[in-house]
Amino acid sequence: MKTCVRFFGVFVIVSGLILLWNPGRVIFYLKNHSDEFWMYFSAVGVRFVVGVLLYFSARYSVFPRIFKFIGTLFVFIALAYWVAGYNKFRQVVNLFSDHGQITVPVLGVTAVVFGSFILFAVRKKH
Image 1 (cartoon, rainbow, N blue to C red):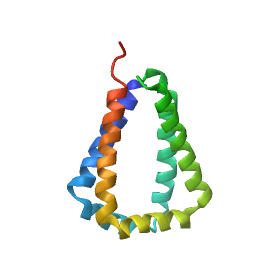
Image 2: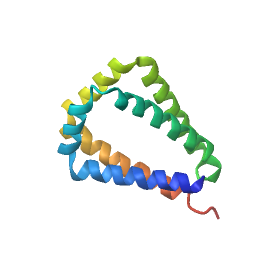
Image 3: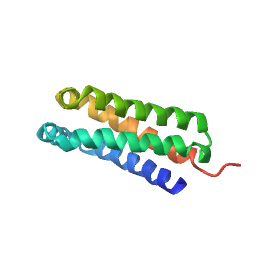
Image 4: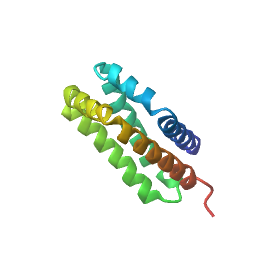
């Protein structure tokens, strides 16, 4: 389980660095694929799986309450996207892509910080 969480942390850091390195490409990708259903399905599914992973891996963390809280938050966000539906999700993606020059770098920094926290939190307990 710790290995999965570490892999996720590294993945989040790399994703954040990509958002910082080339925000224009990410914005272009979002604008061109925001109408495709697989993006909605991926957003809901990945958030749900990551939320469950964080929740159940809390015992391996130095900060188990924070992991449980973030995991629960991810599951609720996934359920909110699912309940809101595909059209509302497209509106959110279009909003982010329209203001991408501001939001994409902020999301990149947030991803790097979050991924670093995850890697820090699953280090060996003393």
